Amino acid sequence: MSNWTSAWTWSVNAPLSIDDFLKIEKKMSTRMIKKIRRFGELQVNGKPAVKHQELLPGDVVCVVPPEEQFPAHFQRYSYPLSVIYEDAHLLILNKPAPMATMPGHGEKGESLAEAVMAYYETKKFPGSFHAVGRLDRGTSGIMIVGKHGYAHDKLTRFTEYRPNKRYVAFVEGSFPDGRQVIDDPIQRHPDSLIERQIGGDKPAITIAEKRGEGGGVSLVELTLITGRTHQLRVHLAARGYPIVGDTLYGSSSLWIKRQALHSIHTRFQHPITEKMYHLTAPFPRDLQPLFSKMGADILDELHQASTTSSNVKR
Image (cartoon, rainbow, N blue to C red; front, side):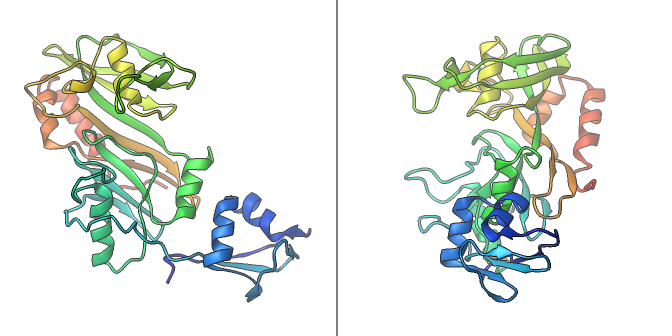
């Protein structure tokens, strides 16, 4: 049984092939169309569709994709997920830290993906885990998960659906005032499988703006324009302001045991309903000692924004 089906009517007074209809009008990838033809169902007016079939005005296209499944090596991990928003197509979570997004080689099942697997099982939901961008193990905050490949594809492949992401980080030192645009390419470090560094030909752009300062650290709001691995961590460290607690990129901290980085807000157009969503993730407790350095006004202002996470604006 599939976790979603769709039926659409071709209403334009002009013929169009079924493949072009799915690719152009419904933004389906060629790979997904092939998968549906092979393992699911593709019908026109209640009958199996013929390859390259031409649609006429009034024709009804019905798509029944194959059932979504988790990889066999995933282990069920019972964990109390913090759900910000959920519908038949998306699951949006406030990811804790430290927690890996996906299971690593040789690790027991304590990843977010495996916690979602257990969550789906309790709801008898046949979905899978399609992360729309991953958060590092030590980063907390909003994670968008597509319950099926179609939702994931639209959110990752098309600019109009791609989520706008905003983060907050505590960094060492006095970060410059004003809006800072960091435009430095990022590449893999030659001596590490994990670490990244400035260089190469892959563009990486971050917008940063200081929101507070105190006790030798600054509170910085960050917006991703691109989404390279470790982008925020590398960009800030390269400018001389490593994220507090980020030992991989030159920081250490007595206040927190992971990088003080939180994905606070996302804005996106829903891949199925087309509605706009604005969602916010509350701050975890381990950031409170750092917030106390900023003063009550900063904490109250950001906390007020985070507590609106359940108020979905459409």
